[in-house]
Image (cartoon, rainbow, N blue to C red; front, top):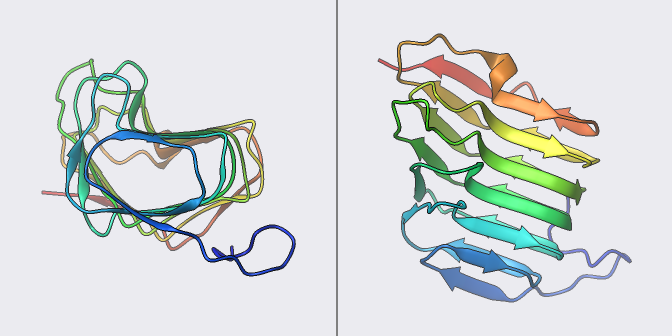
Amino acid sequence: YDETLDGIGCKEDLPNFYINACGKISAPGTYFVTSSLSSGLEGCLQIEDTRDVILDGQGNSISIGKSANIGAISVKNSKNIKIRGFHFLENIVSNTAPKTIIALSGVAQSAIQNNVFKSKGNVMTDIYLIDSSDNEISNNQFENDGSDEINEKKKFCASKGVKFIIADVFSKGG
């Protein structure tokens, strides 16, 4: 995915934004997260009704507490979105853990790359895609520090149109 194409083959300079708090993203651009974040009841970052967004965690973490559905990032009705460079830390050891870390709904031609998902084994699905197409999930690392064995089937849920790259790494921490 070329992060500088505007959809008709012309290069476009996307504006840079620097964020240090949870919130909504609804305009094209490159968003650099400048500090670690903590998710609230409805998750942390929402990307909605836009295109051409790069969300770069720059190695920062999103700590995930109790949440109804989405633990960290939700993307809805968008195209050409790239989520990269995050450490997702699920710190809950109970049945109140979020159901999903990243959720994509109605998303096309996007990528989730170079992230670390670290959990205690309670998250139902790390990455959830529905009604989305031509998306790529690659070069991510999935770790479980809990007593449960890693279950690759619980890490992804997709309705269609996902290209998984084998470079994703699954490991059980100590």
